[in-house]
Image (tube, rainbow, N blue to C red; front, side):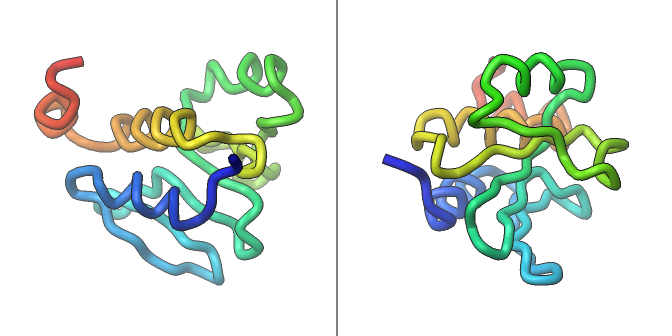
Length: 115
């Protein structure tokens, strides 16, 4: 079953220090000023933080699910997924990993149990 914007919201806001903000019709999830996940205005695409050096391989591995960000966002550690292609478990993993990239180590380890 494809994920919804509410699924993304539920996962993102369950993470310590995360909050929701609306920017130009995009629903964004942040820690401080750092965006770790973003839902497109039509709720079909999920952008999320992802290591820059690994994104080409991710997109190549599942091109029907993942795509590179638009050209103006290529400088960021960012990838985009088609929400209809994700399930809730994969969503939880992607969003949690993106969040983990932008919180202090102590917060990350406190939430993930040192993992």
